[in-house]
Image (tube, rainbow, N blue to C red; front, side, top):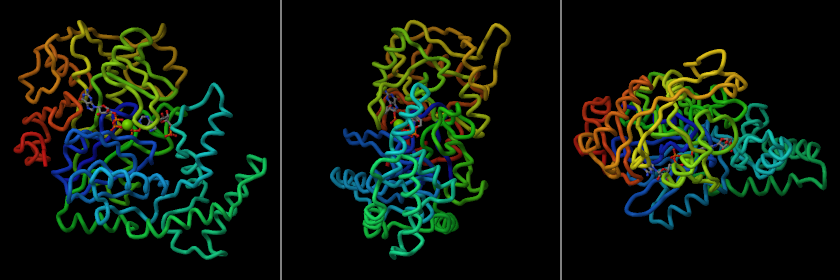
Amino acid sequence: MNIAVLGAQWGDEGKGKIVDLLAPSFSIVARYQGGHNAGHTVYTRGRKFILRLIPSGILHPGISCVVGNGVVVDPQALFAEVDELARLGVAVDGRLAVSDKAHLILPYHRELDVLSEARRGERKIGTTSRGIGPAYEDKIGRRGVRVGDLANRSDDGPLANAIRENVESRNRLIGGSGVDWRSVFDQVCGAWDRLKPWVADVSLYLDRARRAGRSVLFEGAQGTLLDIDHGTYPYVTSSNATIGGVCTGLGIGPRAIDGVLGVAKAYTTRVGEGPLPTELADEMGKRLRDGGQEYGAVTGRPRRCGWYDAVAVRYAARLNGLDAIALTKLDVLDGLERVSICTAYRSAEQTLTEFPADLAQLAACEPAYESVPGWSRPTRGARQFGDLPREAQRYIERLEEVSGVPIAIISTGSDRDETIIRPESVLARWLPLAIENGRGKS
Ligand code: GDP
Ligand code: IMO
Ligand code: MG
């Protein structure tokens, strides 16, 4: 079985924890899009790891990790992450493959990201300032530089020409004293020696691995509502975080994906600008932020918080063909007297039950809430559905009804062990070993 694990909301759903939890049932974990704008947190052995570019399977010895062509790679960020893992006792060499077709984030992409945000002023996206958007712009504009291009570093080769042309166009755009293309060229070439051992034809690698019976977990970054095509455009990231990204971002066919697991928080968060229909600008919003420690793993920015938005999750279910949901951070709702669920959006004229493309239409709507009883007995650390307070069980069952997707995993804390895997769920078919072992521990 090869399954995809991806975000069903606006990112930071807890994908890192779920991927780390399920990884021992797979032999490869592969990232297909995004870059080091992602921050996937994993707690294990009492330590905290934040994975940015390297797949969240890396903490399990013996699992291979793949960075696909759909990912944009900042070599310095990759090296820093590998070094950080080494300091924490995790060896990466021999277990990492980076696609030769992955596009590079070059030093001036970061600068362009910051400038473009400044130019947008009040309409800024609130990006992570990692150069993600400008790197994808160069890719789509057919002037990008790919990892494999570094193999030919001659002074008058295609790499030198591409960098010279890109830097000159950047200089025309920005003015001022300008960047020296040669220093960029030298810096980029300097990354090759360290990158080279990891560089691979990822499509071929995955095909051979699958033929040899090895299973793959596809790890999404960001989330469905941040997808460049289907998210709250233009307040989105620049890649396809949804399921189609798996095929294009790794060079595999759709039949290689046997199941799709969406990760959703028991409430909703968003970092950066753009619509968040259920946002709570009151004490409850603060309560969720404090209780859930909702501060960005990458930028440290406070995340905006609100109630669970079933319209958004239903949309994610449709776009990705979700088979099941992993519901995270249930424990953050512990102690609330009542909990609300948004089931539709309502304006003076109409009720919307499907997520609209038009942001003005969305802005004119208010969420329609259903209020359900909360629970006082903590769910934190629960490992069996039956151990949850009855009200928490009812909340989950109601989320399944309004989202239209069964909830297969319930996360009740940030640690691997603080998890309920429902034995009657689709996971029993996908990952019998994970079920037998209790919760997929290595
Ligand atoms: P990702 O980007 O989707 O991997 O999510 P992040 O790592 O950015 O943010 C999720 C945060 O929630 C991390 O700090 C996790 O450690 C934490 N987390 C994940 N699952 C749970 C849970 O069930 N309960 C609590 N309290 N925290 C969780
Ligand atoms: P993970 O994988 C949450 C948001 C940014 C901004 C928008 C565009 O950890 O869930 P970008 O730098 O990508 O051009 O920023 O997307 N964003 C994320 N929000 N989680 C993420 O990743 C994100 N990656 C980007 O805050 O609103
Ligand atoms: Mg994150």
